[in-house]
Image (cartoon, rainbow over all chains, first blue to last red; front, side, top):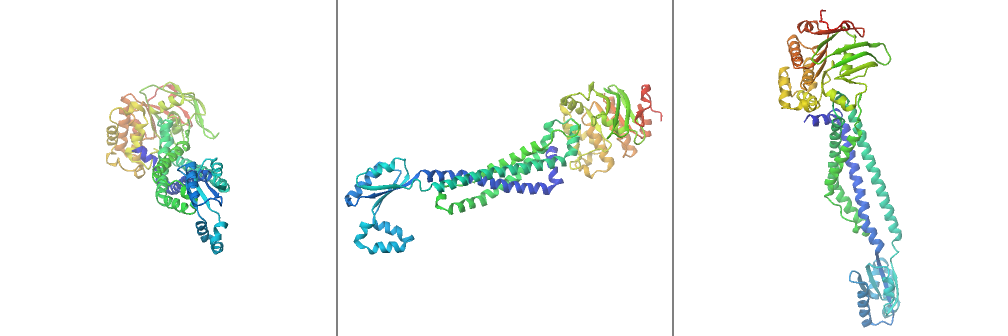
Length: 288
Length: 229
C-alpha cells in the first residue's frame, strides 16, 4: 500500500502536470489510433479500386433480341458467377443519362425509332475480374468492341496511397510525441520524488525498487489518458468513422471501426505510461 | 565493524570539516560522538551511514572498504544500517506507519521475517506513536517526527545504528525512552553510534565517547574513553 501511496505522490505534489499530461495522452492516443485505423481500413478500398473493373462490351448491330440473351449467357458463363453482368438497352442508357445530361437525353429521345441505331447496346460486366477477362469478352461472337475501366482509378489509387503514407507518418509522429511527453513527465515526477528516492537508496533499495514508483505513476497517467482515449473512441470515433464513410461512395468499403479497440487503448496507454516511467526514472540518484 | 583510517572531508574545496579522523569500532560497541556546533559530527555520521564519500582516507564497514565495494554489497551494507539523520527526512505524504513500513520493506529478507505489521505496531507503541500511526508525517511535531525516524531505524533490527542528535527535540521522558530502546538494541548485539550534545543522556547512559573539535577527534585516539565532560 505504501508503494502505491509513494507512487501517487506526484498527483498530490503536482496535480496539474499529471492531469494535463493525461489529457494530452488521451487526445494524442485517440488521434494516433484513429489515423492508424484509417490507414488500415483504406487498404480494402485501394484493393477494390485496383482490382475491380467495369467492362463495357458493345454489341454488333446485327445481333438480334434472341442473340442478345444467348450472348449475355455466354459472357456470364465466361466471367464467372462473382461478376455482375447486365444487358443495357438504348432506352436504359438514355435513362441513366437523364440525371446528369437532361438536354442530351431529350435530344436522343427525340430521334424516335432511330435512337437504337445511334445509341449503342452494350453489356456491362462489373466485379473483381482477372486481367485476361477483357480479351475473353472481346472474343465472344457478336461483340463489336469492348473496353475496361481497369486503369481509370490509377490517380485515385495514388492519392489513397499518399493518404495512407501520410496517415502512417502522422501516427508515428503522434506516438513519438506521446512517449516524449510521458517521459518528460516521468523525469519531472522523479525529481519530485528525489527526497524519497535518495532516502530509499540509503536504506538499501535496489534499482528495481527505485524504479517501481515511477513505473506505477507513469502507468496511472497512461491509464487515465487511455481511458479518455477509449471514451473518445467509442463516442466521437465511431461518429467520425461513419461521417468519413459518407463523404465518398468509394469509402463505403472501409472496414468498420471496432469499439473493442477501446480496451486495447486502455492497455496501450497504461503500457506506454509504465514504460516511460521505467525509462525516465534515473537509476543513479545521489552517490552510487 | 567500523574502521575510519585518516579520513578527511571538505565540501567544495573549503576548509576541512573532518581532518585525518581515525576511528575503530567493534561489533556491539556503543560510541557517543560529541562536540559543539560545526565540529563535524553530522559529517562523520554521514560518511559512516554511506551517504557521502570521504575526500581523503578510507571508510570500511563490516570489513568492506566503501570506496571499492560493489553496488550489490553496498546495498547489503545499507540494509544493515539503521540511520537516523539530524533532519529526520520522513516522507511527508506517507503516514507514520507507511514511513516505517517502507524502511522495513527495504531492509532485506532477514528483517522481514516474522510478522512485519506486528513489528511496526510494536515499535510505534514503544515510542508512544501508536495513536498517531495513520497520521501523515507532514502533520507531526518535530519531536514526533524524530521518534518516527528512530522507529524507522529500529524496525529493521539493524546491525549498526547511526543516530544524529536523536533526542534533540524531545522532552526528558521521551529522551530516556528513546535511549532505552537504543540501549536495548545495543544489548541485542547492534553497534551504536550516537552524535549528541546532550550532556544529560551521556551522563545517564555512560558509554565510550569521541570528542570532535574542529574536525579532529581529541579523546578517541588514546583508546576507549568514558565520557566525563
